[in-house]
Image (cartoon, rainbow, N blue to C red; front, side, top):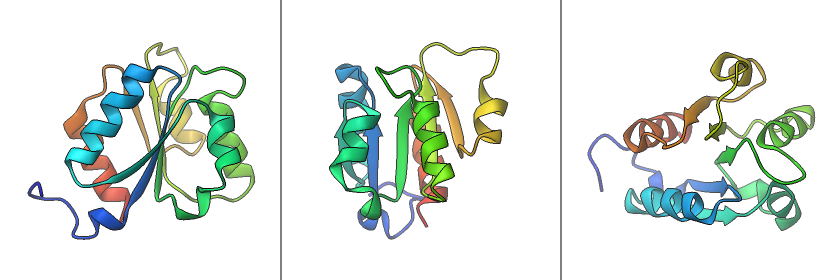
Length: 128
């Protein structure tokens, strides 16, 4: 296990949501290499319908997806008083980037290609 990671890494299940299968696979492989359990979803709707929210310790979601965007998922979960940390990733940053998503309740924001080291460090700090 990599140095500096919390001892309970294996108890932390992370949902990765992205409609780009290459990004999804890349993030799952990265997190798995650090000992995290991952569950991957092609859409926000697929994640919500899975019924797995209760065991998820962190969510990584793309912004630009089919019907429900990553922002839509973030807002839906926050309105439902869900406190699971949510990290937003995007390949198309806009003017309402990092500050906007943090004000909306995200714990982190990354542009694609995602800085893997920074992402793992952030996950380690929120999956306590």
